[in-house]
Image (cartoon, rainbow over all chains, first blue to last red; front, top):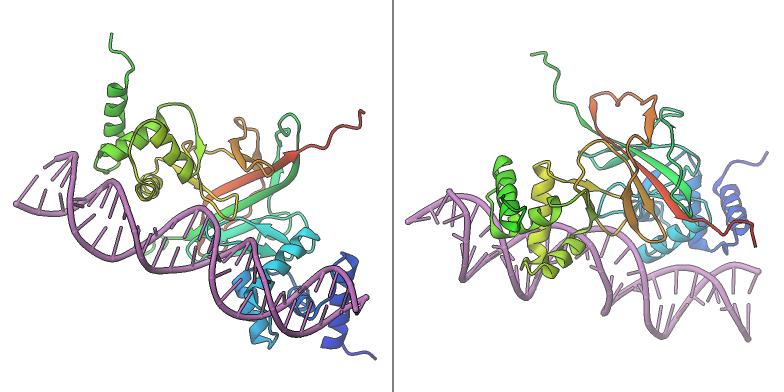
Length: 147
Length: 147
DNA sequence: ATAGCTGCAAATGCTTTGCAAGGCC
DNA sequence: GGCCTTGCAAAGCATTTGCAGCTAT
């Protein structure tokens, strides 16, 4: 009987935030709502900020940055480094890898199990592996030799 | 008979630059000399600039950046994105992957063939794979349960 | 001589920070 | 009410750019 409306979603978000020890403020709920309401997303801070404004949620860019880092720290998001100027975030925190389109500056998941890293090296003395990032850099293919 | 002195090295650098169509200026030769004189190196623009100054080669930071990008464009260097604020460069342009120590912000090669990427996905429609970057993020291991 | 380079410093773009006002418990 | 958050704008960094003077060919 309950509709999957924004109220329900906000409660979800609030619960999710509480679960990781973050106070569920209006802004955090709004952002969590945008981020976790749908499927996996890849985005930059600025993109999320724009989305928030488009959804009529007032959040400052500074708060977007702060919140994003808190979410990463809480394990709700993953941060990815593919381009020099800009940080990317990913709502998918599970094991998976990425395609990065260098011409468009676009990031997307490699479909499930599309990459397997074999024969991993052991971590150097005194260190442990935290994570393995595989980025397959792609670009527009030149036209096939078909003219 | 001929010593492996700096003159010889400069000539090597000049030839290398000419080979890729770059005019062998004093600054480019100095940087090429620092970069390609020894083994593989991983560095940031600022580190290279510091090295150049330490070696009494006057080069401005702006020229270091310009030169680095020219070298990358010419295939003499590879650029790597592992941390959000900063670009890393690598003199090893062959196929290989990296360890990135998140605590120290240090990049190093994974010893030869230490990583194998199996079952690569095909590039999306209309694109081709340019390169595959594997970054194994490591951190200091907590002390073994040995106290 | 001339086209290409270099250096300086200002500009840029992303991200962080300081501090006063506001919101959650 | 108290403490954590937010927002604004300024500060901070790494990197890029404009332009006058210099340099390799």
